[in-house]
Length: 326
Image (cartoon, rainbow, N blue to C red; front, top):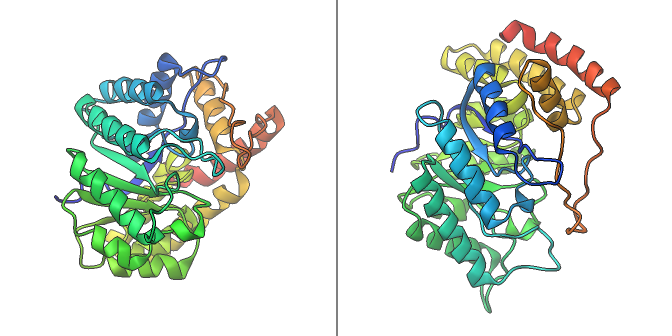
């Protein structure tokens, strides 16, 4: 199976829109998607993403957002749906292994039938190795089961903070990349050596490496990556797109300038989710700021809402840096 053509430039880890009671806001989500499409520069949308609070989702939530967004963006932009089984990332309370895998398969096929262009599975930290099995063997076994049971393109997602023993080894990635429908993966790492080795491992494979930390996008592009998923692919996809176009046009100076702009925005905008929701509302797309608590997991914390003062400061920096790329 070929790497999908949309695995290029900016793939947006879509922020989830909630109602005041924490339930999914379908109308608000559609308005937000309309804003992002109008925003331009995004090649595909990833719903039930990490920045979209994926660890708070239930089976019904996942089906709901897949139905809603795949239908809304049909014929407009490809949609990727996070389809891992249900787990809140509490390492002290892991789910039943068989149920977790069955849920992932069920959600993956549901999303594809709903119109998803691909389905995304996180590194299975929810599972423990079986007796005599290494963590790398667990990763292989898990993704082999997923790829065998899902009738479409499978994407890997290694989130920020993945436990060291669960990090995908380059040799493991090379073996998995030989599977027909294991087409691409996002790796959220700022480790340059690790990034190089992962990309080296798939250099001769039909596999789309997606940079998961946009501060390394320049390096990733030079090494063979073609796409990025990060906060900037939501806030400033035009700059992500410009960096890729500079690569294609043989313009390393332009790539560096774009990377400088990307990094500055990462450093300056500390609450991108709330910022972009407020910005969309200001531009005429009513998007509430409500969120959903992650309090069931002692390893995760709820972020405070953005203040109006923070928003005003972020907006000034944001618009000034983005302006040359519009």
